[in-house]
Figure 1 (cartoon, rainbow, N blue to C red):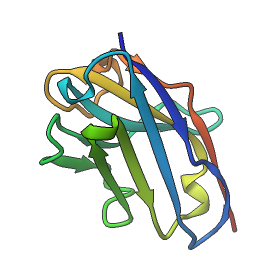
Figure 2: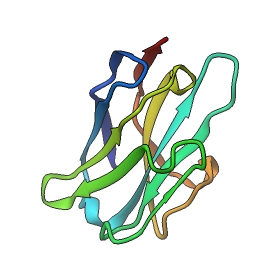
Figure 3: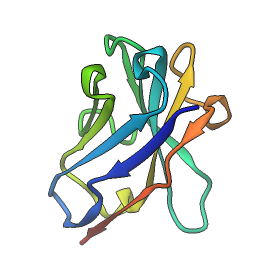
Figure 4: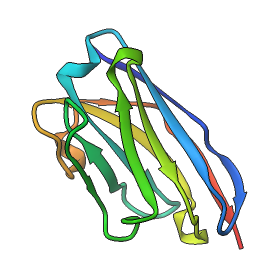
Amino acid sequence: QVQLVESGGGLVQAGGSLRLSCAASGRTFDNYAAGWFRQAPGKEREFVATINLGGTSTRYAESVKSRFTISRDNAKNTVFLQMNSLKPEDTAVYYCAARSGPSSVWVAAYDYWGQGTQVTVSS
């Protein structure tokens, strides 16, 4: 079992930045690929970014590419999402997820989820 706890969300103006963190506990985190997903009100949960076990490979949704950066520090069992140039359409609850095996863009591929952290971008 892996427990995930997100932090770092909040209210920011358009054009601003936030850094989300996801702290993992329970199992050795470098055995798991990690991902960030988000869900806006009335919408399905969608892929944002994913990173492989060793942190050497990343993938992004087109809507966030060049603005968001996913990274991980396995020594600290933490995954990060640096979000720059935020837009109102980035407003959502952001979830961290983990899975054993390769990274994936699919919600259903992930075994473990955090409780989410709210990100609100005002115009």
